[in-house]
Image 1: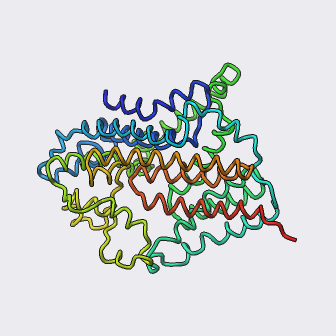
Image 2: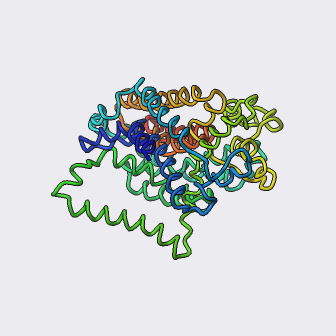
Length: 421
């Protein structure tokens, strides 16, 4: 428990300090990725203590280690993984400090950025371009067989629709409602994923909280009733998850079943200690190859193994044979640790911290350049989508999907700058 508390203090310490002013900087790199790191740890801890997922004696996937005889699922320890994660948190924050001030010294960012209008330009053209893009981006994924093209390029196009409502939220209410309805349709019938609804509402949540929410004011005497009501609603929601799962037909475990990244990382750490991993292969290389469409790199079709599938092959060989369609998430630190041990994990944490920091710095520079807030909305897929899948170790999934969504949003906003004579 001590190591868990230390992880919370290291990963979320800067964010907790930033709350002294009551401002929640949801777009800063030291907010969302550390949140996911701690969420994964707590998810595994709750499962370890309660067996809520009912998948083995320990955590979500540790029960599977019995397939590797040198590992004992009963005596299996998370200690080494906790320590590496703790150290990685320090390096992540060091990396994020390269291009930006720490989150506790940047709580006034929303004040400076909020002085700008969202766009300056042709709103009618923006309205038309948004409707056209919203109407066509999801069509390829609905009608085409993506596998036949050797890449999953159609999925990011459809996914980009989920980020368009927040982009037009402060520009035109009618356009917001239209794009929101299209996004809900896409999430329900095209993407067919419960997570897609998160991609619709999470960026709206991040954007609204960043510009309009002060925790201290909300919890003050003047807003005490609203604060208590919000807290009660939140506790009711959490309770309904457990009650529905325990006594009803709603299997709420499916919302959390895939978030076992920390367990996979812990199994990797223990497996490497026992020499169970084939170190001649490079996991980093495999992740990089995953990001290159096979229509460009044709050799990928015969030589490449999906990293999510390769987890089963490397860590759970018997499962890979008996359940060939089994895929696993990794972890932010997985690839670096697989190739270079603790040094690789810490270097990876530093790299990702600096990468997110650079994107946020670039966004603020573009806000000043264009004298408008719309670059923030082009950036918003990074914290509301890319950060989660990067935390899960899915680098290709994070980069490609985030890049396509951001490009689509850039096209929409840049269209407002066009002058029609």
